[in-house]
Image (cartoon, rainbow, N blue to C red; front, top):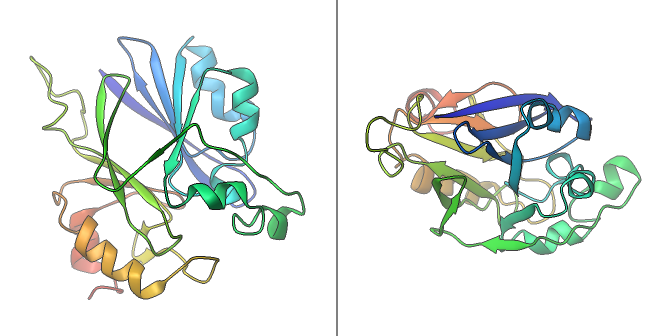
Length: 223
């Protein structure tokens, strides 16, 4: 069985998630900001092995704890969309210098492209690039049908989308930062995310969770 644990942490209240395979005792992080002890508490308490950090995009408030986690878990793999990898290394573009006064430059271990599927902790994860908030913002979609086990669905809550700062409850991400594009963001959400199953649970980078169905029907940017 799998489960998702979330914490709100960092200087701008980022939602950071830990996806856990309870059978293999493996885990992946989705976005990591703020205090490393807070982010790794469940992993340590349950003696889990973290295999990867999936970054939805390169802004500092989603990745400023990467190096701290790397120190604790040197074998962990840091993964980001190929078109956001340059921002991850650039303190101006990733906003770390402007917002914190401390430049952060991180090199990913692996980049992923639009439509690519990756296998981690027994899951198949589809990478969906949705440019607009940043040039290479990546959403990670876990399809219940793709990940269906022999005896039961591995995802008790159905389909899940980790979408960073792309789509929020009744809102969308900002587009006034480097490489942002408001028109592209709206178009890409409509063309790439609103085609997902309507029951998909959307876990954004800030504020409350939502669903594809609710946003299609109620989000003021699309209605």
